Length: 148
Image 1 (cartoon, rainbow, N blue to C red):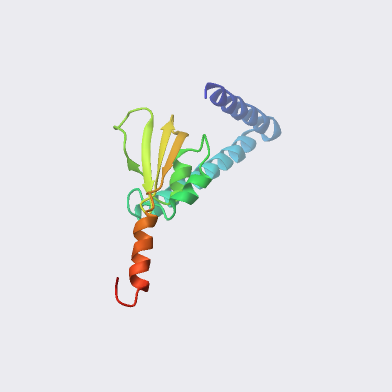
Image 2 (image 1 turned 90 degrees about the vertical axis):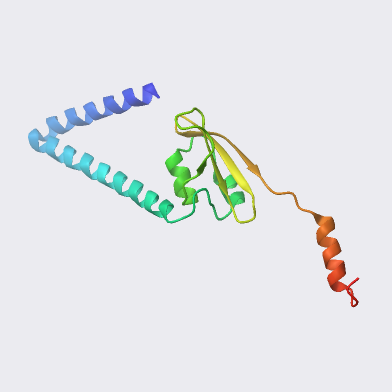
């Protein structure tokens, strides 16, 4: 993570130097307006994601199976919230590492995701066990003309 910050800082200084060399104060103003536009677009995206998540129940996802399929290592928490359109149910203590969140669907399947430094580290999907014997006996009783 340190090298990314250093690279970002170096790129910003290089852009600033290039803008100064190309247009002086006008070049720096143009660069500044571009950076402000980028920040506003990023802020708008965050607000939109959180607004959508606020309209849904805590820790609910339409399909835990689809969430499990879309998850991959190093996704940010904000990206996962955008995928689920819901804020996860927090299972870990506030401020603890790793952060653990759970999303469940209507079929009682759930995905538990561990975040380290705000990024997906591990996840686990749990599906409820199916009971074929109970289902088979209910179908037999329903098919019987005399009710068993």
